[in-house]
Length: 436
Image: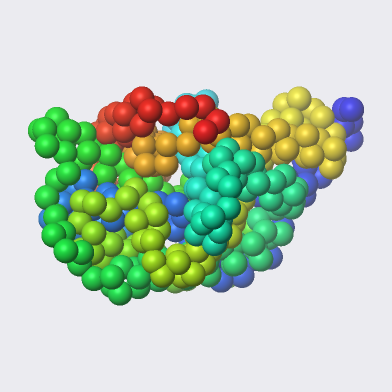
């Protein structure tokens, strides 16, 4: 099954087949809802819990600072997409290779991007399964209890079908529905919290009694926020779907979409985080919708909105992985681009993420561990390093200082948050039974 046409024709045929480069006719609003879907995911539901771990002062500061820093680094990536005349960096690792060198750039970016994409999809599997279970238990409280494992498998079944949509533009409808759902369930989350009001005896102090417990929880809260603001690892791939000419470069419509997306992100994140913590204090669950029990019909609806949203989020994060797998198979292994190859590779990936989600469904711990370990580099400071390498701003200039401040903030997140997340996973694992 070897593809033996001339190299130039072969490359063209491959690029027309691969999911990232096959279509370049996206509009600016595609950028808006793709970015909303990529960013506003499972993380928004854990933000009140992150606030409880951080406290009012540090929590508000880090939430707003993260919004500003990640908007700045996203602007950098949009600008760098076509920084070299006549060339487009359609994939994160291609920009990394230009900034750091062919081999080093590949080793710096690909492992981190893969970790971000795959871990996101695992967390979305867990979130989808949890939300389906919550919906079932709310709608039918007297029904026989069903294991969460089965709900994760039900959620995965949708992806065994949707994963075979060929490229980003083909999932635009799914992504739009997901973006609408994210705004809807976020509004329900903070609206229901306002309706409940501050609970009697609400406590805003740290939940842990020991100093070490408070420190570990603080670190985990940092990871939750890092996870919530992570979406940059698919930005170049989204921009690659847009048409571009010297007169009308893709950065203009892409940036317009990003601004709309970030306004929606603020509308979703800040009310949920602050109002959820205000209402429940340190008694809030790591998923705000689990804390909100009533009105039953509203919380059940919100959980179903979450399911629809994370279906879209899963596909957005899976598409770059599909692109990497399929690029390797057809370029390095020299398989022929065909539907059978796509069927096998994508089905295997969905099955893999489902199995890991079933085995390790620790929602809160997974968020904070992956949030710091992988998401902080690709979102908070790797774009700044690339900007310094490519643009070479004057040392001690304002741009130079801003980038190094972002790098310092991101490195601290990367180092500290996985510690809290790993501890949370270990604590959760003590009472956990496989396939429960």
